[in-house]
Each structure stands twice: as C-alpha cells, then as structure tokens.
Length: 108
Length: 115
Image (cartoon, rainbow over all chains, first blue to last red; front, side, top):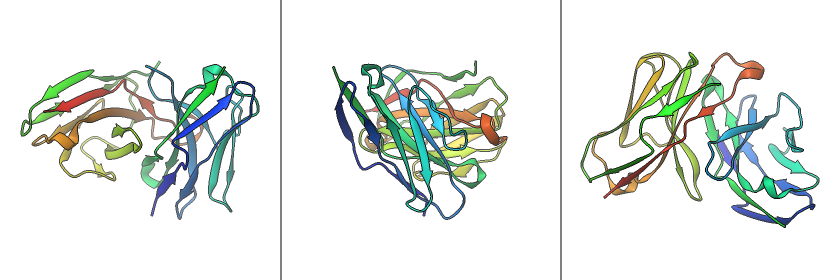
C-alpha cells in the first residue's frame, strides 16, 4: 500500500527554536519524496525534494529508507515559517499522494 | 511562470446537480491532477491523467469522473453532487519528464459548497 503519514496535525514552536515536522511513508518501490508548503491565502508550492538534497529557506529533509521517513527540519524557526506543510510521495506513473498535513505555528 | 488556472474560486450547487470544474495549464505539461483538500485529511487524489484522453483513478474516485480531451485542459465532473462533496478542489500539473524539474504546480483552488 502507498501511504504518507504525518503524525502531528498542529505544531507550535517559539521563534528561534528548532523545528521538526515528521513524515513517514510506505511504498514498495523507490520513493521520490517532497515537502510542499501552503502559506496563508497562497497556493500550494514545492518547498524541497529529496533528490536535490538542498536547503530551502533554512529547511532540510533527509530520506531515511530504513525508517521510511522524510522529516523536515529547521534549526531556528521564524515567524514567516507559519504555514501548512504537506509531505508527498511520487510513485510510479507519476502518481503523487500527500499526507494529512501539519500546521506549523511559530510564536513570536 | 507556469500558470494553472481554475475557472471558479467559489461555487455553490444544489444536491443532485451535475457540476463541472475546469482546469487549464499553459506549460504543455504531460500530467494533470485533481485533489480535494479537507481539514485533517490533507490532499486526497481523485483522478490524474498522464496524457490526453488517459486517466487513472486516484484514492477517492467514487462520485467523480474526469475528461482530458486536450492536453492543457482537465475537467472534473460531479455527476450528481452530494453534500459530502463540499470541499476545496485543487488542480495541479507537472511536466512528467522526471528529474530535477519534476514538481507539481497548483491552481488557486475552487471552494465548492453543495447545499
């Protein structure tokens, strides 16, 4: 079965604190994993993907195939990071499925 | 910039009506997708298409159908709208070529209310 789980619906952190948004997946093939973000009143947009191994807006995510995880991390949260974050899995035939999302709130 | 345009931002329909949601992309993308977005459930894939006239069921296709007669346009059809189809509907497209450029581009969404 293909599935993406994000255990936290809501996550609140103070500005300057570290952030970790959890994502686990189940997929028998070779996964392509992404994090998408939706800021208030904006469209969903790509934040980062695992194959690029880059840092975007200070966020990083490492694919751990042994733990089937792709957690999103940032060492120092900023107020502008407050948004809805979705982990996504691309399967064969370009099908993309999403997790339920985590709403991140950064407290000033 | 890639543009994915959904024809309506808000739509109110009555139970039993046939509803058409239209989506157009302007970047010659191969793949197009329809999702519904509900609080606590995230985005759930309804249907997707990887080529003209081709369609694949997603995770929740029941009560929906789609049409892709032209590459740039992907329509979602609710044959007989029901109240449990009240939701935000998101259309997306992707190049379909794989690699570093592969990602979803989303429309701004259509908030459908079925009364």
